[in-house]
Amino acid sequence: MPVMGNGTHAIVEDEEAFLHEIIETMNDAYGAELTEEDTVDMTAMTAKIFANEQMVTVMRANNTPDDKRKKFDEVFDEVLLAHVTTKFNLYEKLSQPQVNRFLKQKWFEAYQQQLA
Image 1: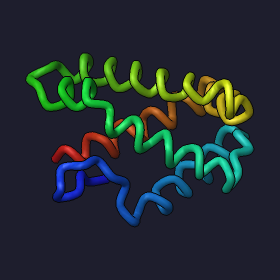
Image 2: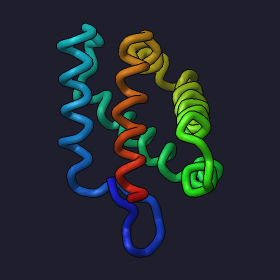
Image 3: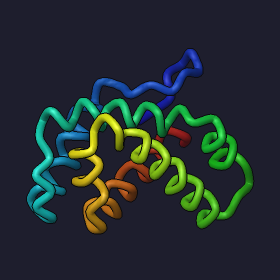
Image 4: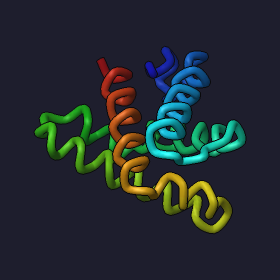
């Protein structure tokens, strides 16, 4: 998911396919029972994760891959927790250990690709 030319972090048109693939895989492999409605929340979460300036700084700096991953996981967890009050059902689904690991991995890879 690339950064748009104007410097803002934005999810491009392939976002829907990206999230659909993640949802389908998590549902099939982990029984997450995520719905298309959950895609809306996950889209908002993706935008917040990718726009986090502290994470951008860590990712662009000369940090180790482990440090970059640690920061990504921290930001992911912060964004996920922010949804607790309004989207507890989604939080429960995305907090399942296998689902959580898979989702973090996929979003981390996408984030890395946008920086390339």
